[in-house]
Length: 397
Image: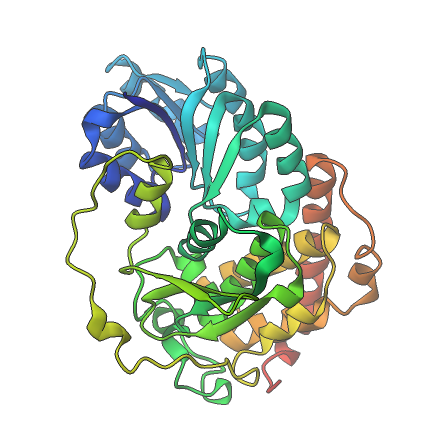
């Protein structure tokens, strides 16, 4: 049976990994819609190769410039996601949402009713708007499978287990490029070094989040929501080889873990074959040597001070939107060489303690517009703060 797909964010890191998976399994899948923000050359090639008839370009300038190029190949091109979705006549088997950042939340909410399954790699959507997403999932009886390697591993381990038996879930982190360096020695490290991840080939933003350990903080918040568990159920362990992706310790005395190579193609492919269908991932045999003598290390909070953020146990409030917005903007500025590496840490930890923001930590957004308004408020305050304080932020935590 051919499975109908939609891929949102097909030109990003996760989107490209999905395309690689589908190239090896073309006969089993049909892509109905692809989307990008501005990477026209890539999405054009993808649409031609997979005979995709609908393409969404979220950048209005790029849309206007390249609309005719697609139409010459009889490809319908849209700027508005609602217009694109109106062409979907029935629920597709699965939507892979690989859009990064908070921008992925609105498409997630809109795509639910058009999909039997959603494979979601957008942690910001889940962290900021899980209560909104869950409501739509329940309403349209749509299943969600997380495809971040850690969350897919947890999902795979516990999907047939009684959650009452879970004692602890360990999310593994590589430690990033600075695992063996003290934070005091890398205050002004250039972005090119922070982007040099030892194991994974990822986008720039998530690579910086990996270096600061913010990505792992997001993953804990995401897992709490997806699996409906508490902070006390999760712990972060550094696993430098990134071969084990999640460990679940049960009250029964059993401990289970999932290991696989450092490629997102494995969780993506497995998410598309949830039933007992026969399929293969063409890779090398299990590498037991990687596990031999492997150490798991508790992260040092002196070198990864952002881990202090997990002490703020505000679930489903504006805290999550504020946290993500500040981090996104700081990482963007760091990548553009406008602030130092240490400024990411210092500013984040300072701002989330400020009364301007803490007053929102007991309130929850009711809809996506509430979240958008809070994003604007946060950016306005952050921009003013950096303008007057950036020169004071270059000191040791």
